[in-house]
Length: 345
Image 1: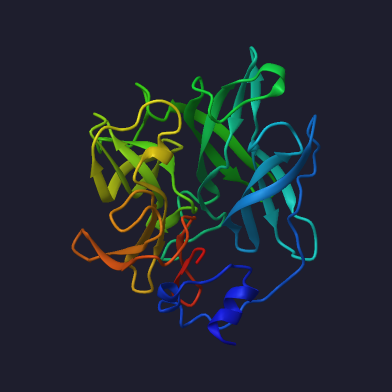
Image 2: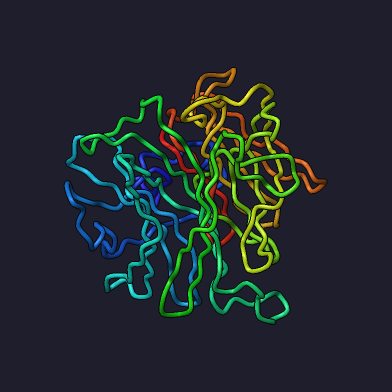
């Protein structure tokens, strides 16, 4: 199978040449029955469908997916309704669906939930010495949430009264039931943001992939801001479970941009970087990518990749201009250790 045939069969517009150089170990892709289409419930108006999906391992035989719910056929553009967690242990049967986050309405306002992503330690997980993992069956979710005026059940993303928040959820799975319990809500760029331990950084927006394990902790890519609002950065947040709660405790910036953090709604799309992703290379070092929005070689068309250098820093591996559209990009690693990048050409 040639490389471009693989890209088409995978359902991707293309795997870029730079990505293909990293993915020689991927030789094929299998197809199976379609198991996720639409949520089982029905909204008051319009129709629901599943969109962005973030997979994780729930236990030794069960795949989990944090999957976004979109409401279509309404007067609103981009009408989201939070996320479900779907557990699948047999691809010949429908999965088990659990509500993770849902929209809220109060006093004529809509609190709309963007997709949840996060990290999870599989139920029954063992450490390297074959002893039980202390946090098995637990994890965290984080997602944007937005307050809108909601007269006549309509909202606008451009509404200057919009307020952007971050919600944190504690996740658990006992083999039968999956639970997501919200434990924190913080403004993205307000006076009381979601602080990352004592690092001096706060969370603006999470990345575009679920977390990866690192010892007892979980590593999640994110866009962050200095507590004094003097800079923004894309990098990796370390989440640790303390006193029964998963919390962001440290931040490792990969690319830092000085300058004030944009005020008002939607700071993410007015920052130079967004939608980062992180994965682990075959030798244990970390790989990192991010979507540049306003960089010297053109707004959003350059393919960039970084790798930890083994000395506490990061080294840039790829800087390929005009390699993709201004669209999402993620770095991934196949089960055999082959690294690859996915984007649109």
